[in-house]
Length: 117
Image (cartoon, rainbow, N blue to C red):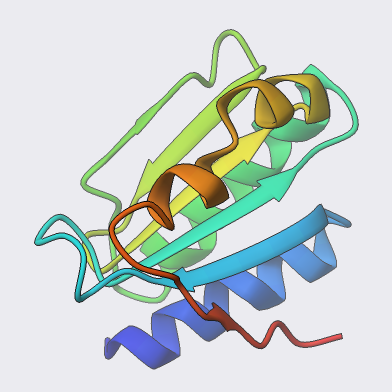
């Protein structure tokens, strides 16, 4: 699956799951780890887990099995690694504390990718 198709699948799933404050960042010029980083918030630990698990399930169903996932037991911050797309789903207080958007804009300003409404 191409990067753009995978990004769209993740963003559509986040929309279906009612994730909040979704931000997609193109980080290909900043790291070799991934191409797109998506950050979203969930309303509770259960919501964070459900979002991450659903994204992983739909990606696998589309032939793009996750390389791994973290934080599903705790539910404060879940990560789903889809190789070219990495998803971070967090509770708002955790997201505010770590502020990944600011962290990744340190090497150079990042331009957010348009997220479907």
